[in-house]
Length: 375
Image (tube, rainbow, N blue to C red; front, top):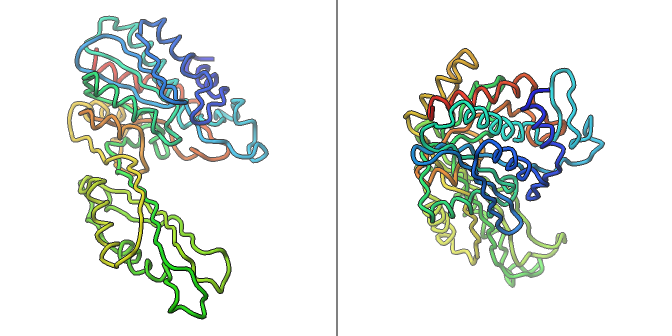
């Protein structure tokens, strides 16, 4: 069994349901230290983070990933135990097989091989791993990025090992991500009997025009390769289930996925302008999940494109689609960020998996990018 397959299986065996690292980072840290990396454990709250570096000075290349996984759900829904890695017909099954313990293992192997071949490489090769990507993402890379900023740590390039490929390894590279902004809206009314509406104030009736305006609004026409900003209501709740009582409050959850035409602050102001224009008595709680980022043409995109063309035989799609990743916390440090990883078809699903042949090719893919940037 080769190194990357064995390490991936060792990581899958650890029940690292977010934010519990379950011993993944100490395992990785021990390996990296043997290869000459300086490893620093950064624990914030219940979250473990690892910052490992080899070399010094600029340029600085960071390999970014996470060891935590989402809950697997009912065991009986899986064909095999989600935390007992199993290979069937050339496919490795287990929670985290694709998202993203395979990417983490490939990073480690690629880094070990690179520093062994180039002990005096230029600049700094760093690995940043967290156990808080699938959860609230407060004390993970977001917090580490604050620490790095306070230290004056420069980052030139960042490669995130998230599963980005669509159908074959290397057919897509993410060169940016949309920002995400969530809100909990509470619209206050006056409870009363439905037969006497003049004695009550229905918060649902009052909020509907404002919510309709927000939902129908065309926020922009997109940006570069980004799609237009979108607004989605994800949940509503009011009343106590009785059909003869006007509720006293309406609670609404909504989310905006936005491109670089906007900042979270400006979107908050735009939404509240609409809410106030309809005279609502409301309170709102905003949660800024991250600003959008976009990596322009430059050395990182050029090198990645060249390597992926060699891997897949054709030019990769360069996309800004999908959800969010921890790269949103590294990009504001001035880094150019891309995301390259295995096929994402099974992530967060029952019987999550990665093809063994793809897994075995990943260290070489990452190693080729590292070599062209730092050798």
